[in-house]
Each structure stands twice: as structure tokens, then as C-alpha cells.
Amino acid sequence: MKTNYEAAPVTKNEKLTVSFEDLTSEGMGVAKVDGYPLFVVDGLPGESAIVKVTKVGKSYGFARMEERLTSSQDRVPAIDVLGTRVGTMPLQHLRYSAQLDFKQDLVKRDLNRIAKLPEIKVLPTIGMSNPWGYRNKAQIPVRADKNGKLVTGFFRKGTHELVPMENFHIQDPKIDEAIVKVRDILQEYGVKGYDEKRNTGNIRHIMIRRGYHTGEMMVVLVTRTAKLFPMSKIIPDIREALPEVVSIVQNVNPKRTNVILGDENIVLYGEDVYHDTLLGHTFAISSKSFYQINPVQTERLYQIALDAAKLTGKETVIDAFCGIGTLSISLAEKAQHVFGLEIVPDAIEMAERNAKENNITNITFEVGAAEELLPKWVENGRKADVILVDPPRKGLEAAFIDAAVEMSPERIVYVSCNPSTLARDLALFDEKGYQAREVQPVDMFPQTLHVECIVLMEKVAD
Image 1: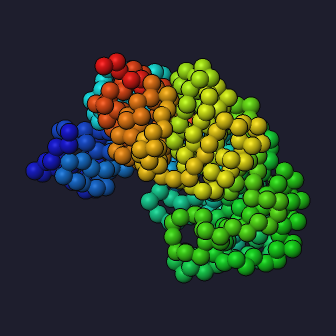
Image 2: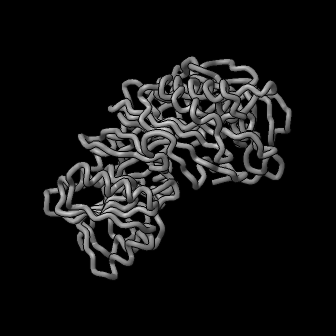
């Protein structure tokens, strides 16, 4: 519980010697001065340091590391300090085994604090043998330096100041190389970098997606206008520099917005699709399709979800938030029938194509918002033995939870990318007679603060 202090025991710009007791969910060290929390980037529990107070609030403040006096046994050398400055690798200074422990503890905290369900066991986080170079997709901003030369990198935390970077360390190295090659080709032909203050220039982002198993690569050029000259030279040069490219797409985004992709796609080479495989199935993936970022951990995540569903071949399964059908298709192999629902029409098109290409016929896909479609299915008398959900970070809407419970499935499998909303939703399901006994965290995003979780909820006997 936050405490409001009549007067904070620290003042701005004050230098203090502190000891760190904990880490926040944002990965900042927590030091306390007379009970008053100070949050400090790059502080680890067990360390002491001299810090300078930068901001003072009623219940907590922030400080900057000035000098580290002692180091934690869990501290490791940073691979690249730029990854800390821009926020792409906020945990890189923490030993990987300790990162896994930290993420397990994050889930425990939320189950205790939000769900008030401390009896649910949180299993050790499943990590990677090599927690680097795992990302199969990059969306990298492009700007021009003061000499007009194209620069790629990432924005400094909390700003739109581009920090030049060419090696992101957590991305597939071939994607990092491709970004630089595409950027340099655009530079050679005089394509202008986007200036967001003036809304001028053209190339805004370079997106690269690469199939982990297939090696196929997609290049997406996000531009302010549909004009991109000289197209007749740019496209052959990209294909020559990157022979694995099967798709080049121009996405046009003329708006002053932080949203990366616009509404208009222009296919410049191939079609708006590349392929990858997952759990023995091949998937066509479009430029706008959601596809899990970490292919190695995705197979582990999905296998746990499949095992939790306990399918025998007789069940009707609903896969809410089904995306392009990556999990639906594996479920269908073990179920009688699967109903997939997804709000994004493009994803459903891909899902139907993927089911057909994998010779899966016992799936029905439908476009719609989960919280609107599921209650309609209940009204129409549709039943399900198992419901699987993999919602966005905001978690599930109350209308969806009510409809899911009304369907009275034997099992609900919840795949979550946000422990806080997961905890909130587990408490709601628990009140309505669906009980979880354990949570399995999976580290899909090493070196970052994010963690995925899988939970099996089963209907409690009346």
C-alpha cells in the first residue's frame, strides 16, 4: 500500500548513500530512506550506491545512479549499454538465472496483491539455453542525421530522440544485417528519412520478418507517401543483397502518429506473405499478422497449452483470440472440432488459408470481438468442452468471462502476456467456480521485463 508523506525525507538533487532491497516490475532498484521508496535504474537488490535524487513525489521518488559501492553476485556485464538507454534490454545486467527468478516472483506478487490467491503455485520460469538473438521480427525507425544520411536505431526511453543502433542483440542477427542493407540501399537512391516534427521525408520504418525454420524473409518499407522512387532499382537491389527475401511490401502511413503501420499496403515483390513452421505445421504470415516473436519458446508455450487442454479427440474447443490459427490448427488435430474467433479480418483470412494448407478441416473461424461474439454463441446454444484464451495485455472483458462461464466448459486454458491482468481475471473466474492450481511462467522475452504465463482452470464440482 502506498503511503503519502507529509514531507518526503529527501529533496531533489540531494546525494544519498542507499542500499537496494528489491526490484520493481519495471526493473528499477528499490532503496528506502526512512521508509520512503526511491526507484533507481541499474540498481540490484543487495547493492549499495551513491544516488542523486531527480524527482520527489508524495509517496515515492526517483534517483540516478552516481556511483555503485558494492555489486550483487547476480550482476553481469552489460552486453551493450545502448540497450539499457533505449529500453530494449532493461535486464541485461542481471544474470539470466536471476531474471527467471525475478519473473517468477513478479507473477507471485500479482497473484497475492491483485488476485488475493496466494495458494496458487507459481512454477519456476521456463527459460532458454541461449537467451539472445531470438526475435523473428523487427520494426526499426529510420531518420536522417544532420547531413541527411539515413540512420536506423531506437528511441531513447521516454523520448523520440533516435539513438543509432545496428546490433540489437535480442534480434535474429540476420534481421539486424538486413535492416542495415535495406537502409543503405534506400540511402544510395536518395530516399529521405522521415521528420516527424515537420511530417516530411518518406521512409518511416523498416520492418523485417524472418521465418526461424524456413529462413524466408519479408521486407516492409513503411513510408509517408505512396511514392518511392526509383522503385525499378530499389527492389532488384534488395533482392540481390538479400536472396532469402520472398516478399517486399510498401506500407503507406501518412498520419502524424506513433502507430507504425498505416492502412494501405502495396506489394512490390512476391505476395504479402512469408512462411514459417510451428509444431510441425507450416504457416503463411502476412505483414500485419500477429505471430509470436520468439519461435523457440513459442513451441514450448503452445505445447504446454495443448497438454493443459487434455484433448482426447471428442471435445469441442473454442480458441478465442486465434490470430492466424497457429494454436487452433494444433488443437484441431486432437479435438473433434475447433471454433476460432479473432477481431482482425486479415488474421482470419490467414487462419483459413493456413487450415487449408495444413489439410485441417475440423475448424470454423469467425471474425468478431471476443467479448461480443462469445455471448452470441451462448445465446445460440453453442457449447464447448474446452476454451482457450490468449488475449492482449488488457486481458479479458467481463462480458467474455461471463459468457465463458455460462458455457460451462470442463477446462479453460489461459495464455497471458500480462501477469497483472491475468491475476485480475483469475480472481473473477475463481469467484465463478473455475479454479487454478498452478501458473507456468515462460520467458518469451529474455533481457526484458515481460513474461508469458499459462494457467489451466478447471470447473469446481458443485
